[in-house]
Amino acid sequence: MERRNGFTLVEMLLVIVFLGILAAIVVPRHGRPEAARRTAAQTAITIFKTALDSFKDDNGIYPKGTNGLLDLIQAPANAPRWRGPYLQADRIPLDPWDNPYIYVGPGRHNPSGYDLSSPGQDGRPGTDDDIVNWLFTMPRN
Image (tube, rainbow, N blue to C red; front, side, top):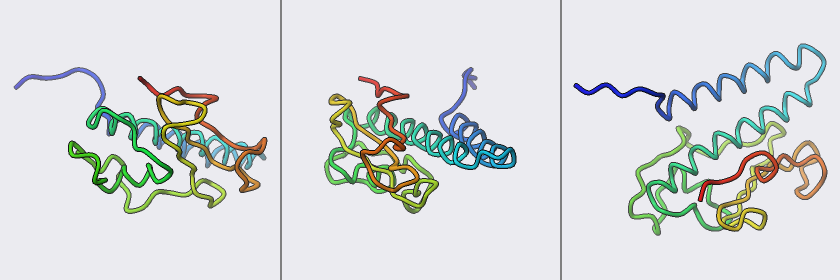
């Protein structure tokens, strides 16, 4: 039996989720609940990035349109090589303020990839409190 070195996608996702949960628990106890929510949203966007990259590896493209995150848990008609689900969930999770994450593919900020954001505390996209992937991650080509 051949043994491979390195981490599997599931192991990496578990570590990222654990760090996000830990940050969401520890930071509010130190008087910074809003910072904890921002960290949790950034962690979720990173998890989505990993799942979206796996989708692209299998299908050659990122999901198209505004419902692309749903393609991570349900096979779309235009992805014959879909090998998901890429997220272990029965629905796409909401952000820490109970708003849906906003996915656009191809993206306006990342035309060769996608834009992914949380509208933040105010719940309105396009404002200063948004958490966005184009400021802290870049999709692969």
